Length: 330
Length: 180
Picture (cartoon, chains in turn purple, brown):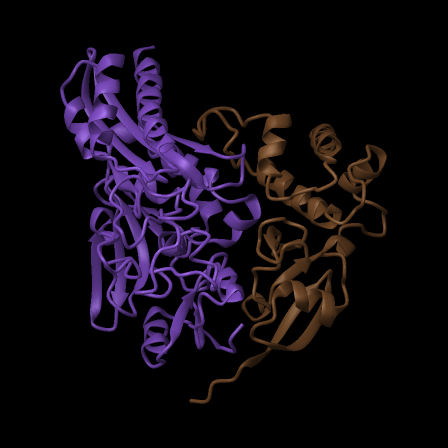
C-alpha cells in the first residue's frame, strides 16, 4: 500500500479544504471498500481525510414528510431506524441485504453511494480495465461476465453497481445533497450516476472535491408498502445477481402508483420507468405485471454468459409485484 | 503543512489504555496483534470477507482488518481476550465449548465477538434480512436458526461447525431472555 497522510476533519469546511489543498486526497468514511481497494493497489490516495466523525449522522424528518439520512449514518443505524422501517421498508430491507453485520456497522450511507464495482477485473492490476485504467480495455466482456450488466452497458465496460441501498433510493427518487467550497448542491439519484459511455472511470455527477452531506427521501405514499428482494449466489453475504425494489399502491384493483428499480443489472441502479408506465392506472393483474416486466427488459442486451439475468429480472419484478398486490388485497 | 505518514493514537483495549505510534497504513488488526500483543483476532482473508478478525469497537462488532488503526483513535476495543472476566467464561463462550461450536478454532475468536455483537443488536430490536416484516410497530422477531444464520453470515467457518455455532448462539439468547 502506498504511504498516505491522515487528517481528521472537525467540520465540513475543514474537510473540503483538506481535500482541495492536496493533489491526491480522498475522503474516508467507514473504509470498508476504500481500505480494501488500497490493499489491492487499485486506490492509491496520498492523503485520507477522515469524515466519519463529522456531525453528519442521524435521520431527521423533513418538513414535507420525507426523511433525510445524514451521510455519516452507518448502514446499521439507517436500516434500524424506526421511521425508515415504517415509511420506506424496502430501504431498510435493502441495506440489511447488503454485506455483513460487521461491515454494516462500519459503512456509511454516503460511502455506500460511492462504492466501486466488484467486477473481479477492476480489482486485478494484472488485467485491463477501462474503469481502473482508462483506455486499457475490458477483460470482462470477453472473459468472466456471468455477473455483469444486461442493461445500459457499452463496449467499454459492463460492470454493475454493487449497492443494494441505492436501488430503493432510485425507486423513491432520493436526492443526494453535497457541499463544496463554492457552496452546497444537490443531485437527484436518477442523475447521480453517469451513463457508461466511453469513460466508465467517471462514475458520478459529483463535482470534484464535493462531500456528500445527506440523502433526502421525498414522501412516497406507496413506499410504506414496498419490498426489496435480492437474488444472489449464496443465501447471505453476497452481492446481488439481480435485485428489485418495488413500491405498489393498488386501489379498487387498479394500480395508483408503482415504483420499480433493479439492482445488479447495470452500472447504476436501474429505474424501471417503462414497466411503471405500463402499470399506471392499469388493472393489478398477474398478466399486466408480467407484461410490465417484459416491456422493461425488451431493451436488455445480455452478454453470452449472463442472459439468465434477463429472465431472472423479469420473474423478480413479476413476483414482487404479485406479492405486494396480494398483500394489498388482504 | 507537512504530511506525516504515521500518527500517535490511543486505544483502550480490554480496559487497558495503550499509546501507540502507528504507520497510517496499519490496520486495527495488525495494531492489536503486533503492537498490543493480543493475537486473539485472526488474520484470515485480510479483506473483510471472513470475519476472523472481528472485534467490538465501542460496543459494536467490526472487522478490524478494514479498520485503519489511526481512524480507530480513542476507541474502546474488546477482543476475544476481553470477553471473559473474573467471573469466568461468558455464557456464549461456555456454550461454544459445551456444544462444540468449533473444530480447529481459528475462526472462533471472531465468531464469539460477532455473536456478542449480534445478540446485542437483536436485543436492541434491530431487524435482519431474515426478518419477514421490518416494521417497528410489531413485536420483536424471535431469534431462530434462520435469524442466527443471517446475522452471523459475516463469519465463515471452514471446518463447517455452523450447526453447533447456531445452537450455541440460540441457547445463549434463550438463557439471556430467561435471566434478563
